[in-house]
Image (cartoon, rainbow, N blue to C red):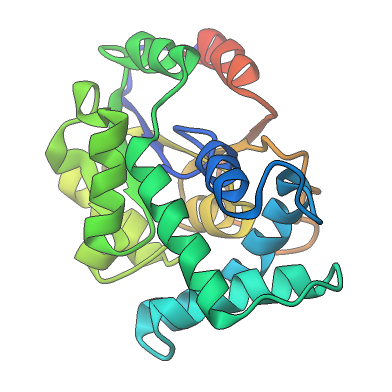
Length: 242
């Protein structure tokens, strides 16, 4: 059981952590490609994420446009299944997907998790992405019911993105957590887990998709790592921690 002699902070990623990112994707996918597409949404979703991760940093640095990233991730994903998608089709799907992301919400259980954490730990958010896009998600999720505005850090605003140590250091310094025990909860092993541990934080890997661990021999920092596969498991872990 966590002792209360030392201040505790828990910061969260947004996408696929505070909400299930497949929900708006599946809604947009069904709307654009129909109820019986050539490739099921659940099959192609993780493939689009793989290709998105490949070029995300290039899009954020301006080496490619956001539109080029959207086209690349959808086209490359469909190519794996022998399906050809035009630039126009990729962007039309992205427009619908972006609209569905304006209607995202937390599950009742995630709201219960944040209720439980409130008052027991200092709460915050670190999320990668364009400022307006990510703040719109924060607003749709009504995250500021639990997390103060000043404790929410968007990479485009900070000028650094996960897994860079700079954004974790900035959040820790801004929140006054130099002497606190800090945990970061996120779904991406290379961005969230490696980033947090290499910044000297502890991490909870929110592995909704059953991904393989990638930490063998990767030289992470000395922080502790917990792994959960669902919101239910996250709540159980938190109950034993704070």
